Amino acid sequence: MTLNDLLIGETAVIAGHGLPRLRSMGIQPGESIKVIRYSPGNTVLHCRIGSVEFAIRRSVAEQILLAT
Image (cartoon, rainbow, N blue to C red):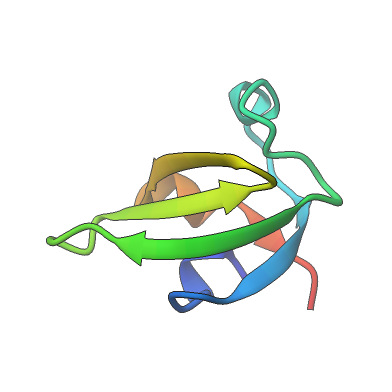
């Protein structure tokens, strides 16, 4: 399961990813991530980890694995 599989309002725990630049954004294994909304074109996810909100492209979200 990847971040792209979450629906709006759902929360999951990050299992891992292969992108070092995401660690600096706080996207690390063990963190809970919640999808807040999708962009109008459905190409970007607006997410929250803790109190930090950020937008992430679907192509990047596909590489973030979630624990089931």
